[in-house]
Image (cartoon, rainbow, N blue to C red; front, top):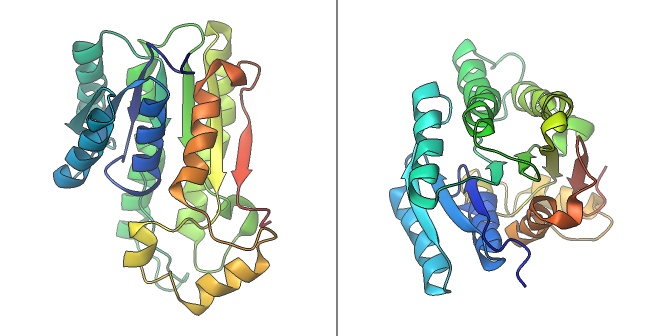
Length: 248
């Protein structure tokens, strides 16, 4: 039997990259998936088509998770379409590296709103519907142990996500809801290509420092999300699983 048969999942920021990989992997294990997107309807529709073409169930729902009413509407859409909610993957995120001198209030607020407030608002809306055995999975980052230069704002947001993960594990634990984080290293996605990371000296240097000798791919992260969403991870909560090929 599929690991996630009869489960319903929301994956935020799932129109591409890690989120798309997670959405497709959850669906492949039997979950009905709400594919959230902020602006890329075409990308989200393509993910839904991949899922449904493979025999799975999925819908695309637009929402800016940094706005409370839209985060609530996202959860409401999942309940209306599928009748329940078992898994929430908080993957929506933005990143921009900037030196201390180049850091602006606008950069801070935009990054913290999506990466931190979005996690809180979406989990707040979802928690009303999550029952015993439910799983919340926050996508953090290995930057919280690597501390790369010129990433104070981005690394700060992911440090907050790590802390929130621990707090919510304690807060939701009495309801038998698990909360864990995945902290990916560098993953090759549309975003890392668009940012110019792929093929750069920085990118090659990261690969050179990674014990397993390669960059990560969305499927590497998606398989961990499937594990955390499933009953196989029933005794894990408050954990941060660093998925970086050994890069520390």
